Image (cartoon, rainbow, N blue to C red; front, side):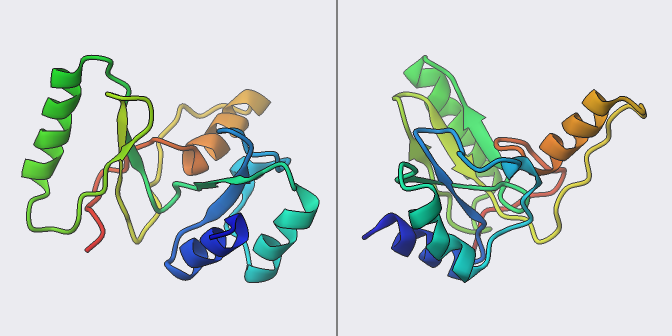
Amino acid sequence: MTPTAKRLTLLMGGYAPIPVVGKMPPLRGWQNLAGATRDQVKAWNRNVPDAQNTGCLTRSMPTLDIDILNEEAARAVEDYVRETFEGKGHILTRIGKPPKRAIPFRTDTPPIWSIARSSSKRAATMARQRRNARNLFPRRVAPRS
């Protein structure tokens, strides 16, 4: 399956795919993307041909990033998630560099993040990144059923 086909499949499944090189999105301002259209996804192959990997924005897919190098501890965290959400949907675990793993969730409503009020550019940037950044947790999440 080509990267474009994978991205279109994700898009049709309600996800917000983005092209990545390794783990880095090559799109300027990717943190501010609300999602892509079918035409935009198709254009990525032309516009960013080096981006053969695919990531997903986590605005509606917060992810528990288990960056633990101890296998037993990483398994214990995953087991806890499975016990906590048993019967509420499928638990999908992505293992990158073992024993590290990530467990994505789905939420119908993007989480609202609280940050200190500030007029600084840095605070505004942090707010945008928190709305759309990878590996953040909303208050109420559940596995996709």
